[in-house]
Every structure is written in C-alpha cells, then in structure tokens.
Image: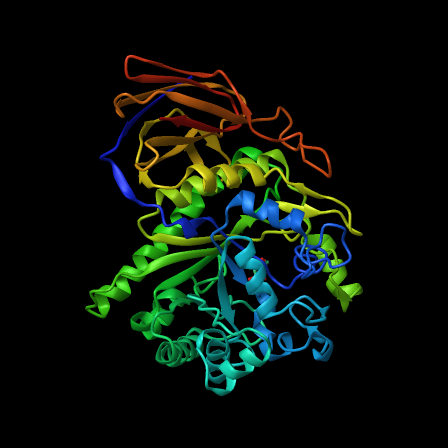
Length: 501
Ligand code: AHR
C-alpha cells in the first residue's frame, strides 16, 4: 500500500502553545501519596517528594499541571491543606470515597511543580462552595501581602505569591457524579459571578469555563452554548474532557476514536463561535482540552474499592496498565490536538502518576517505571515545539465497524524555526498492512534525515512493567531522502517520529 504527503513551511496551522503538553495530578488514588510524594522512600527529597518520579516528569517536559482535581475539587476545602501539617485535619474525600490526610496541599504542590519545571493550573471548588472561597484561594495564592489571606500565606512560610496564572472554574459540573452538580443555567450564573470577582482580584489570570464532561453527555453542546452565554466575556477558554477505551475488543474501531476527538473539538469550536456571533463579540474563545487519555482497564476494580472498601488512604485506584495499542491511540490523540493547535491552546494528559498515568510507582515503595503511553507523549512534547504545519495527505483507507472508512495514515508536522528542524509524527492505524509513504519535502530545501524512530510491537496487548520496557521507540533505517522526496516504510500498527534538519 502507498500513501503520499506534501510538507511546506508555508502551510502553517498555528504556533504550538507549549501548554498543549500539560498534565494533571489529582488527590486520587496513589497520584500524590505513594506517587509524587513518599517521604519514607529512599529517593525522597527533604520535602518528601520522590526525585526519581520528578525526573520522569521532567523527561516528559510538562509545562503545566492541573491540580487538585478533577472530581476531588468539587468538595475540596483548600484551607485544610495549608498551615502546619500536624494541625491539618483528615477529611472524607466524597468523590472517590477515600481518606484525604492533607499532608500535601496548595503550597507543597506548587513548590514541587516548580521543581518539575511546571506551572500549576488551579481548579476551584464550584460544587459545594462558591464565589467567596474561590476568591479567598486566589487572594491566598496571588496577592502580594497585607490582606487576610495573603498574610496567612506568608505566616505559612511562603513569602512570595505563587502567581498562578490559569484557573479552572469548577470541574465537570454537568456530571451526575459531580458533588454539587449544576444545571447549565446554575453553572453559567455561578461561573460568571466567580470569574467577575476573581478578575477584580487579579486581572492577569486566565480562566477556564467548564465544558461538557464528554462528547456523549446528553446536554452536549447545549451546555457549552448556554454556559458560555453567561461566561463568554470573562473567560479565556472552555474545557473539554474525553477518555476512550477498547471495551468491545475491536482494535480497528478503537483506533478510529481519534476521529471522534476531532469531531468533538470542531463542534466545541463551532459552539464558541456561535456564542461569539450571538454576542457580536470581537473575542475568540480558545479550548483547554484539560482531561484526555485512555481509561477503561481499571473500571471494575475501582467500583469495587469505592463500593466495598471505602475510606482508605491512597487506595490503588484508576491504575490502568496500558497496552501497546493504547499508546497508538495516545499518539493519534496527540496528532489530533496538534492539528487543532489554532484553537486548542492547553491540554492535560489525565493523569501523570499512578492514576491513568504514563508514570507508575510500585506499591509499597518500590521502583518507578514508564508505561507504554509515556513514549508518544514524551516524543511529542520534546519534538513537537514550534509551528504546526498541515501536511497534505493522500492515504489509503480501511473499514471499521462504527466509524465507516478511515485513513490508514494520520500525521502532523511541527516545524521548529529556531532549531531548523521539522518533525513528522505518523501513525499507521492499519493493523496488518505496512505502507510506503512518499513525502514531498521540497518545501524544506536542504533538510536531511536526522532520525526515524518507531514504536511498534506485534502484540497489540503488550504492556510494560517495573524494570521491563517491551514497548519503547527504537531508531530504524526505514526512511531515506531522494531528490526532494522522503521515502518511508511505515509499519502496520506503528507510531513514527521522523526528524529532518
Ligand atoms: O481523571 C479522572 C476523573 O475523570 C476526574 O477526576 C474527573 O474530572 C473525570 O471524570
């Protein structure tokens, strides 16, 4: 089978906002306790954070991390998480029916994020709390000094404000599982009033209005149009969340779901622009895809914990062990995000450590390890900085059960002017046939092949584990440039990174 592609430096979609490579840490399962933080671990630093985990986070180069939830935030009382640790109360986390010890809170997490070269995207509780508490947290975090909450922060040993720039106005407020779920009118009003007040405290912050929890929510996209009619003038982004799973054991159809993600993004863009037109506004709203990943392997085990074994400290929840095919879908989702970089300015791989995560730690304080999905994310974050180019692709197609005909080849190109490099990300989602890809690179005159790496395994269900990396990219000799054409052999079921410079 053969495919063709044309790349040109002038076919620009948009510059990549590096925050598209964000991630997420929630007080959930072993993400914080026994994940990033484990004071009795031999590799813990003086603050109790594991240096091996921080190093892996740095390898992913995650510029922004959403915190502290997720569903957790909708009953989070931030005051319980600050001040002398031994005076902090244990609280019932109703979202995950776990015990929250509050040993790590706003100040500890913000300090850790800095060490991991990351900024914090802070979410406020608009489930069981409201305008005043969101304002108090913002004053605590961002106001210099001389007020009740800024002085409280200083008394807690943090003299400089955290200057947190991005704030999420609640989490998945449309979901029946959410504590303090709202109707669209209720949420729209509350988010508008909260945004208005927060911007009075700190006009430099950026705010995210809560969108639908998933594309198949019954209120999508009316939720977006109604809530944005309230919040449009005061917010900078609307959020999207989406998780996929191979529940039907149909890998062919599973890998078609990045097309659904693309439809979801396009519909949210259309809805934002509808509200823009209705308001006769000059402002264009951007998208924050602040929860995305594969999530389904652990569902039954999690239900058992929440129903039958509640109130544990850091129970092993949402510990999906990812397969090779999950890594392919993650790669396809990254390509989809990049292809929409003109409107998707932030995105968070949900999540980062132990909970539906690229990075795992062994239970009981063992070693850290990298899941299959670590690698496409790491390579996109490392090489996908610059401007996104739209490759013109002519790909063979194949049939799927629920998605009709889809392309075999999915691709996007990122051009880094500073480094004078162009990186082509390619997935062949045909599960049995290799493809010869001829890419016209005459628009990149003088560029030579630097490297072609492939993530591939003959077993779609192959996983990694502690000290065992069966699924990781390897350099291959499958590309060559001849008279302005890059000829690449793209293996069936593979994620490819082809670098030119
Ligand atoms: O990321 C896990 C959960 O998924 C989050 O807490 C919630 O926002 C979403 O439903």
